[in-house]
Amino acid sequence: HDPTHMNERTDGIALWFGTPGVVNHGIGLETGISPTTLHDIVRVESGLGGDFLTVGDNGYLVRFRGEVREIEESPVDNRLRGVASRAGREIAVGDNGVILERIAGEWTEVSSPVAGQDLRAVAVDPDGAALAVGDAGSVAYSPATGAPWTRILNAPAARDLFGITLPSTDLGY
Image 1: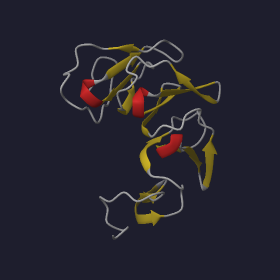
Image 2 (image 1 turned 45 degrees about the horizontal axis):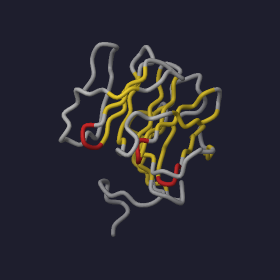
Image 3 (image 1 turned 135 degrees about the horizontal axis):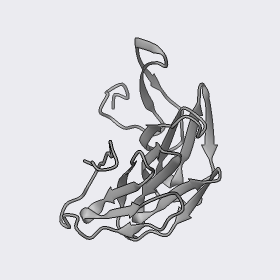
């Protein structure tokens, strides 16, 4: 296969655009980021440490701080598929309903109301409330860091959900 093909996912490779602070500076392909497939990346909110956070197979979490990559300890071996950072909150979600929250600088597995269903994406609104979505219409909600997650029953049960964004406290897609 051609690892330079933009729509292709290959273990441990990230495609980046530009240089921070420089407009239209180019495209690059960086290899060797991880020994595993990466599934999602998010810009880290200032004050939480780092520039970007990515997640992948086997509970893989890596934080980018400029040119430095820091592998963070994960409490799970599950495939992590989604990550969010906003309003002082960092969350990763993945297979079998796993939900991780970074609390006091440590990743902690929290009780999931959708155990057994793969979660594929997570988003945090400007006030810190979070929604995670996944297979068979699975939707989980938590109002704040450390607060319990609850299942939302009104999701379309027959559809897999692959993404979510929460641009404001009263709007989500």
